[in-house]
Image 1 (tube, rainbow, N blue to C red):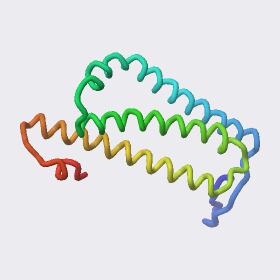
Image 2 (tube, rainbow, N blue to C red):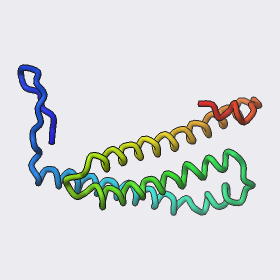
Image 3 (tube, helix red, strand yellow):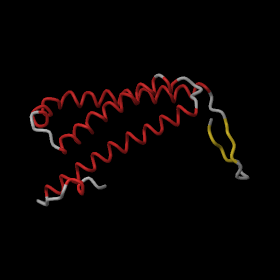
Image 4 (tube, helix red, strand yellow):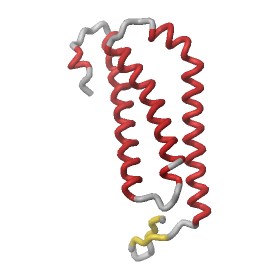
Length: 140
């Protein structure tokens, strides 16, 4: 269904042809798979560096936030691909499923964004040779 507005300003719904809807769903699945594949490839080629520079070091707040953002992103994208290719690819998709998927997208984005932002703020503080207590440094 698509929303349309006529000349009088009335809102109406028009049906999208089934073939167009299926093509859009297939494209969405392909792009999601491409993003997941690219992310896995990037993780694999940088794994030796990550092992040397991250895993061999002691656990700190920065290391935890880095690992969280790195691996939560991979897990979130994998879960998103599974949801898109299974549950959300067979029309009609229930409204509750769409709403749950949308909420999942928002929560995953803000968790990743907040973690990356906190790491960048702490790096800026360290770069300027400032000392800030941990609770203050995580305030976004």
